[in-house]
Image (cartoon, rainbow, N blue to C red):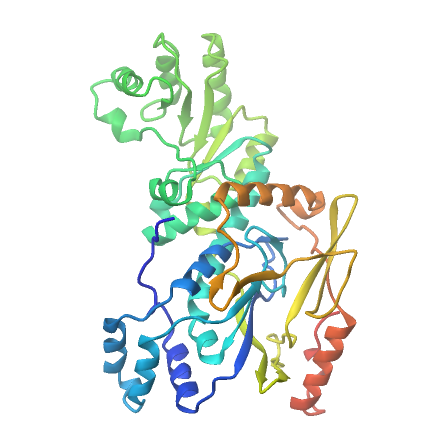
Length: 459
């Protein structure tokens, strides 16, 4: 695969590098384990689709500081008192650690680790910002896509969001994440090139406007694309456009409606097409669509065969950010493990490396258990697997199509009540007794008796 984002070393918050410099100067090279997880799910989400995992591994494997990167850092006032040795360290930097995590496309819930990074502490610290940004955004979009696709009830969903994404690079990542979440294709050609995603799109309103008449524009389009042409019929008048398309006297794949009352217009357009014997011509709808609007259209019986979703999908407009965090859970010095946690109100998390066990019954997911990494539940599926060792990815990157199929299969195993777009119940995630006990032991080392009991984690 081509590398779409080659220069990434300085895509980092400054304090990651100042902490790394501090570790270097104090010769702190012990191994540290950080876990990346979402604290809790937003009210509008009953599940998340973990995405960005493969891109995270690629980042870790290829991370380098160029001479220009190092020269720039040396020029910053923050590093004025840092020794030259630290900059030599950056020039030779390679991520040498190990990573465990869920496979890309896994359904995850609050507090469940997506990635578990173990490395010399400076290495594990430097990568924090990029990993958080990457997993946050791709998980947001993949999760939104899964909801949109589910709402379409088997009808095709196309991702059209690059032009409304927060930058071209975000559009590329969104296209991939949306496909993983279940979309059938994207309008982003670079995503098709890099990730093997099907691409879709034929013409915009400007094509129609470039010709003297709408009929002329339709005929010209089909002369170039006789098998794949989709006619955008609402540049001037959608019903007149449908009538024009239906009387061309030639085959075409579909018509697209991009505005107005899509429920009523799709019914009227379907009637026009059917009256001319064009029952095989598909109706594609676009224009400020999301899962709520699609559900409403289908509930009303809209004869729409495919949905093009852009802004709401590429930006995850209703939930534009997740409470994703990257927290130190343990350190190891000379073979001695120290467990780390945080006890401040509303930001409590459990110490130690963890494992997530998913229980199922009759093929459907029932509940998860967040446990210590050395626990075993033979009747459940362990979700965290080794992904990287000694800075090298362990498995070949899976095709995006394979991840997408795995996501769709997992969605079918999630009970129907958790798919509700509004007021879905929370999927049960329990903490093991051993993890609760470890939490209490570590809290006893750091917190005085006056600390309110509300800092305890939920069981």
